[in-house]
Length: 153
Image (cartoon, rainbow, N blue to C red):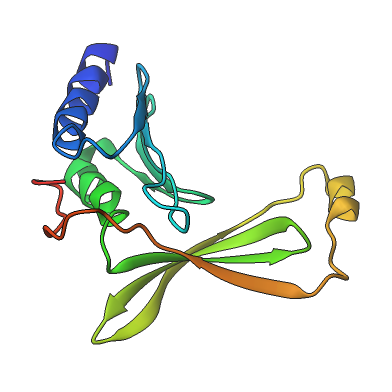
């Protein structure tokens, strides 16, 4: 994807974000990163790479091919939905797993997860495996109640 094509996609996202002036974001040549809208929320990013799109929420991310742009935009918008949350697992002060969950029928369901890789292996020694496992939930809450979709983010 050319830089001009990437800028066009990001400009369209920016125009939609500008409708919600309380959302703060950073716009780069090939990415847009929206700051968490509340203390218990998470950042949401959209990245245009040479051969794919990447959508990221805090420590979770998913890759999309260029033929999946609509899915990538839906995923980006989903990060602002009340039906989306991250389950973050840590030991000590180190987050090591982010689990994407979605609300269906009043129950939270597992979607996917991303964990920390210890590369090189010796970095594993810094991981506080002896500390108690802690779980916290992050969820974005927008100030307005309009349904969030890629078309009206």
